[in-house]
Picture 1 (cartoon, rainbow over the protein chains, first blue to last red):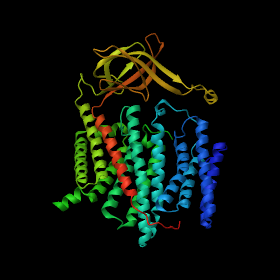
Picture 2 (cartoon, helix red, strand yellow):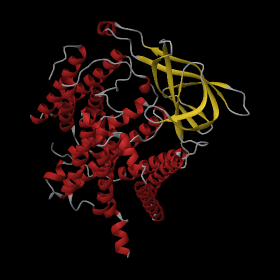
Picture 3 (cartoon, rainbow over the protein chains, first blue to last red):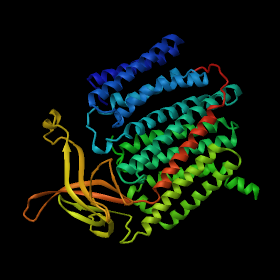
Picture 4 (tube, rainbow over the protein chains, first blue to last red):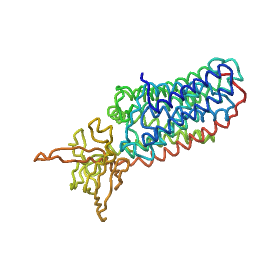
Length: 261
Length: 254
């Protein structure tokens, strides 16, 4: 636990406060106020990413700290997408997710600047990481949107809405996950000489991809007969995402080519 | 029989197979890249992978027969990637001294060689490449040393490793190529990578900088890349189909 007494830290804490304020405003039923806080939080999150990029002199996607900053900034546009696509208001849940994402960036990860090593100097660096940033955010949101499947399995209208919304969100996340995996594989071939290295991070990413593959197969076979199972599968997928992002990066147990935390 | 096929190759089995494979991937994350790679190169795992590729091919064709083209492309793409990987593994197994699949050269400025070496200390001779490589000069360029580097009493981090080589293929005039990280050279089926470097002392104790160039021949690569394209096209079609479903609009309390 450490507090960052820098401009970067200030921007992160400002975003964090605005995200929490969004949740609080929605709890009190102030919809417009919540929407204002949520938009302001997005602006602060973008400022945080932009400042990090200017400060380090490279796209801010090198380590977990920068990855988490990008995820927080990606939340708002993806949330708007759900509003437009599914007519679902996910502001409060997404702001809460944003606060959870930013907490480690604000208080756990260091903000030390490291210049890009030769391996990361590639045109594939940004698309590979950006796909995973947006993909992981989408999959986390899919799990949150699955709450009605779990809590109100008897309410047919809500189940149908939540099923379509989660499936579409998870599909968007799955496309991005696939793109990230394939771009990473291509980059691995160009940089390391092999498109697949049996690296622990690669294996966990593939496992995550297969978990969602299982979810889609299950949904195609069984429909919404068992909404609780669908929700459980999405949460299980999210568990894999969280493990891939945190444990695999940080743990010495999984030493590999992706260690940079 | 029909029920059996539906059970084994149909969707119910497919979800379980996905989860089983995910479990396998997780299990392979624990032993580390070298041991997992060696395990997957064993005959049994190659045969199982070939079986999986056939299953994917069968399901892809079946989906195409039912005009489910997203599913068809997804499964055929996966099968194609697996087939490409198996072809690459076959090249590794059937490598000879005349046709090695991979190996490395350790060179100092001015060295010429066509011999590849393998093993933890690059002491196993694995064969010759059908061209010769002369290291003109190896460059290590660093970032500018900043205040942080000075405080820590260290050199600035490396910005670029570059081996400038002259490549002589039989029947062709020699030409110069720059091998850098993320910029491999490609000569006669071999990708040439800037893999490593180091400092050693010569017989008089003077420091000598050497570079390690990695050579990899993978005839399965076009199949793998083709599989990537097909797989991604399939995923896009799949998502597009799911996006067509209409949500019953209305607010869900949060």
